[in-house]
Amino acid sequence: MVDKANSRPKLMTSKRASKSFFSWHKAPDYVAVLILTMGAIMMILPFMWMFSTSLRPAQESYKLPPAWFPTEFHWETYLAVFQSSVPIVAFAMNSIKVTFFVTLGQIVTCSMAGYAFARLRFPFRNTLFVLLLASLMVPGQVTIIPVFIIMRQFGLVDNHLSIILPFLTSAFGVFLLRQAFLTLPQDLFDAAKIDGAGPWTVFARVALPLAGPSLAALAIISFNNTWNNYFYPLIFLNTWEKMTLPLGITALRGYLASNSATVTMAAVSMAILPVLLIFLIAQRWFIAGITRTGIKG
Image 1 (cartoon, helix red, strand yellow):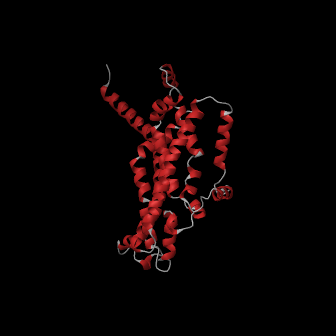
Image 2 (cartoon, one colour):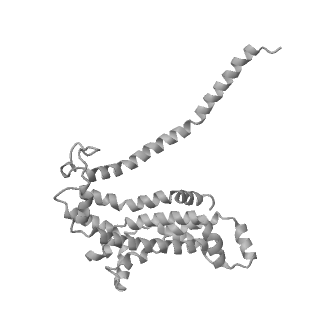
Image 3 (spheres, one colour):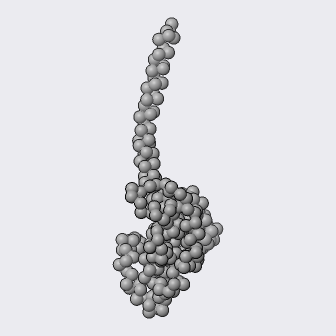
């Protein structure tokens, strides 16, 4: 006969052991979550400080020791951004114009080049792709002088085309979309060719719709880089009417330097709002596009 009284403690002991093993098995996940949480807090802190500074009184802008929360909330600092002599709205419209054309251009050119490197066969394909990747190691500050000379010869200095044309394509964007096209099953392309589809039809109707998440990721990255670009507009744009938003914020800081940094922080808070909204809206496609590119290649 089986002793039920003696079997129950053994069963409970085995369950406790399994629970203990399960908790230890999940320990790396807990550590990873803790590290990611700490990293997220460290990245959020500058935004909290920026928003807090934009609402605090002017005399508390450089208070020591610094306070994270303002003693008084001054929402009129946001209104002061538009009431200053700096045409911040015109600068924002210039940034929207430049960012739109650069983002659209990179989506078009990088998708075609990425598809060519991934699915088409042509001489020196791998060599050209290695040279393309090598260009990622060259900072933009190194090539700024020859680019400026070229733009001056074409009469494009102090023109928005001078900060649009150099960025209509991107080596990183080509790499990103090439990796995305490599993850697509070859059977889809073979089936389209059997049905009589040419290279352009296969690209437009088969490959491009399936690369939507990677295209969304490229659009967000391109939008963010162009919207926040300060160096190239500073070099190529001279007149007040052509300047973009980063230059306008710099001018706003100089205009209010004797007062406080609260109005400048208010302008910065409004400047990053479009980037945050676009990322929050397209976050799902952005993460899918980044992760998909690492499956193959």
